[in-house]
Amino acid sequence: MPRLATTSDVFNAVAEPQRRIILELLARGERPVNDIAEILHITQPQASKHLRVLRAVQLVHMRVHGQQRLYRLQGDGLKPMHDWVAHFTHFWNASFDRLDTYLADLQTKESGHDPLP
Amino acid sequence: MPRLATTSDVFNAVAEPQRRIILELLARGERPVNDIAEILHITQPQASKHLRVLRAVQLVHMRVHGQQRLYRLQGDGLKPMHDWVAHFTHFWNASFDRLDTYLADLQTKESGHDPLP
DNA sequence: GTCTTATATGCTGTTATGGGAATATATCAA
DNA sequence: TTGATATATTCCCATAACAGCATATAAGAC
Image (cartoon, rainbow over all chains, first blue to last red; front, side, top):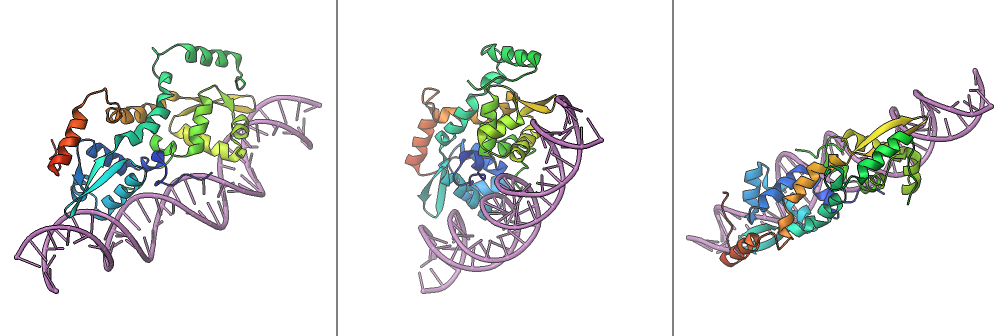
């Protein structure tokens, strides 16, 4: 199973730092491509390419406005990622419950590992 | 700015589907390498390589137990990712506040985009 | 010691990626 | 129409990633 294409997997699309920065920028409002390129200090073609990837995975939405293409964040595209990470939150959120710590300690003491449920 | 190495960036390490599955598995408890390989239907070297990446970004912890190497999830390694995604939660969580929808509508009506704050 | 089990590492080939530069397309203005 | 601005696309190159397979290391059993 090779790594999924950046254009088909949100996790992979967001693995590129510049694209994360673009999303952060667009979270503050709609922007044309040249603005994005300038602000991120990248060339216009690079910006266009990153935006293409983000559009492919539905993380941004484009609309035509004269010669400009205005890009807007489509935040709900990040929901799958949020949901996945949320499964692990209790591993660093001690107040959630103490079951995990208990299990971890138990395993360490027994020097074994548990079977699949 | 090239893509960061899988061994140095959590986002990138987790961009690989198999590694996400490994993390999900380890969330249920500590496991030796061969178990992981069997359960995921991958070869042992592949499992070892994926675990190496996950260890490099501190997402798993290994301890020696006889001939076995037991891997355990280090969930807090996902916190940076969680925090980043959390910035965007209100984009699909309508009850959070209505400012974003308001701004989006405003932009559409004005057919313009807003300046940087 | 040898043999076996468990895991890690090395090597090779293929592929996708991102950058750079040039060019194509689109829209508006004159 | 021609020209200017905004954006997209194409081509080439370097690199890193992953899979597959062989091999090395480590630890226990005998």
